[in-house]
Length: 266
Image (cartoon, rainbow, N blue to C red; front, side):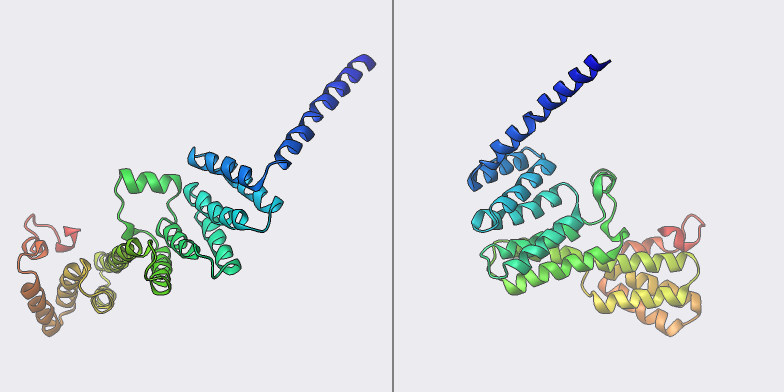
């Protein structure tokens, strides 16, 4: 028994002796060595390993360009790893610590990207890419925040190389938020909440004009006012819709050709 215990302790001490050597080797790395190894892990998709190395770099060499770049890379690694909140936190930290850094525009851009893809995760990515879920069916909070992030980037750094992409994403996000209002209006229509549906559709028209949501917003207003017996408002909305969307699919399919209620169009 004592012999077994002695053998176990000998093996344990031998194993423990390996770790100081590994730690000593790593501690001997230069800042550039840390950065190179971390970037290699990042490029290979080993995001957790990359983050640990970038964090070790910053802890070992807290000052200088490598540490600053590591802070940005940590945010990007979290973003690629699907950790949107951690990516945003890293970007916010970088902005706070280095507001005048030449690459601070990327931190704003990264925040926008993280919010743009917020609430996806693994299952969200599968749904978005494979099942083609409409972004407007998701919680609009992240879309609003993403828009504001990109807007701040474009306003602060209009000549940034990330600005053109940010502008395109902002245009898309406006459409997304507008369609989200339509999703809510549809919900009210299907449940007989005609006043709420009309108000939501009207809000979409006012706040997000000239978006793809406009056509359906007008259609919902026509049907909601009709159900409420508000014929003047119904006719006004119908006139505007027919003038702007004479070939609208809603006009051709709204009469219930299959004998079903019109709201089953959706």
